[in-house]
Image: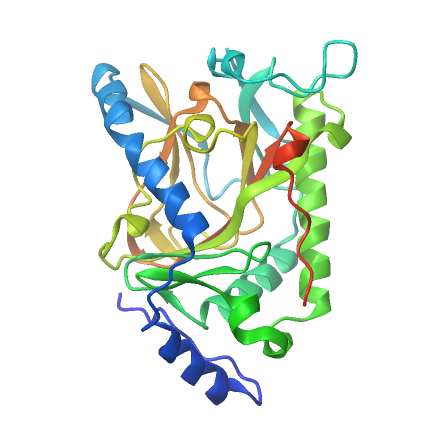
Length: 314
């Protein structure tokens, strides 16, 4: 299925913004923060490829199918890896803990409604219509302003300035913040944490993936990886899906890779998948074969030094 990677934003200033978007592709400066993170990600791939070659993953189990609707979170506890021993623990041993001591993975269909997921998908479409990767994977980060643009990134808040209010609304950001807060609470409840000890961290972003071939390493989203190894600050990771597997796109399932089997999560609009971020949850995303997959990655840390604020309109 041939899909456009850039849509149209139906506002009075659409033509002006589109012209500015095209001009910015010629700029030589990239969004360095994301480039550095992606280079770090690539650097772990050789190690993870070796790990995957040692493990045999002949058995694939569907953890949650797209057709199911969970009335309660489905939780699978696993033994914590030793990754967390390399980092400072938060808070200290005299207070309520945050650093994972109970590890696992879970899926919930009751955190975000289908209508809310549809509204967030429209938000992502509006923002990504301003740019988009030349390859199959594009990101939009409302916190930092990072947006995929060709083979680079731009800062939408810096470039579009006050015109960004012609794209996003205060209600868009209000919903985004409310959903983030709910995801934080369900993670805390599932893993027995005080939610006030969890902090939003970067990168937290919308993603849009289609079947277009990769143009740069930025587009290679399918490599197996460990979030704690790749990003360091991550302690808990979540994915909120905004489109349906096998309806809006083919492929694109989320796969946990265990020593003797795989567990697969089939995306469903409004479904939240979340897990402790260490090597107990090695994972990857299947290549998208057709259609377009939208999701939000929402990441949490126990270290207040790596906390980021909720986004707000300039």
